[in-house]
Image 1 (tube, rainbow, N blue to C red):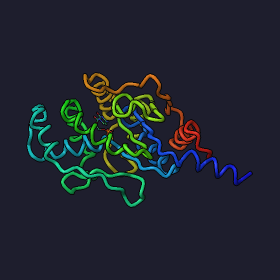
Image 2 (image 1 turned 45 degrees about the vertical axis):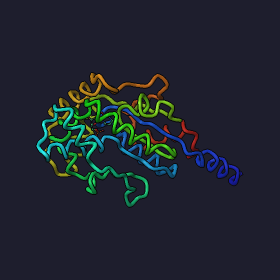
Image 3 (image 1 turned 135 degrees about the vertical axis):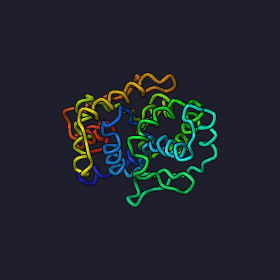
Length: 237
Ligand code: DC
């Protein structure tokens, strides 16, 4: 009996599936995506890192982010690389040899990234990189348009949602734990503004793919969300 279970688990996950996770900011896509990838023995990539790393470089170089040509040329000029972190699961973004670290998480970069993410040339280029990363499957990729645009034929498409108030509370808790200053009302307002930016963007806006599996995590722990996903994928826990 035990042998049979192990065998069926292997059969499914020898398949190199593509698993897409989309959803708004602060909903836990990365936490859940990493844990799902780890269980499946897959790689995980957070595509927001690519947009953030580019934005950081553009700011460093003093570019006007509204100048779409200049930002696109910068994106083309950079040397992009994606290397597994020490856990062997997470693929980290490197630009010109520099890892996308804590510097891409600042509020300044977060706000500015919405502008860069609306740049058509940049989206095309990053989409090409993302498709290349998923070419051989065995990957969990999270972002905003993975199921709708990057991999419309992904094997599993999840749309993770939670109320803006709950996402703000989670972010607030996270900052407090890190000993960083945090104002719940401001965080809530910023989350709502970013949602609108992402949903109203003309090109590849955040929306649910028709055939996405929607999971509302407002009342769930990240562990429960990951378990739901694994069950839908057919991975016996
Ligand atoms: O997931 P994140 O907050 O780190 O993403 C940073 C920004 O990049 C955010 O404004 C949404 C945007 N983004 C996007 O437009 N498309 C993706 N596939 C991933 C992120």
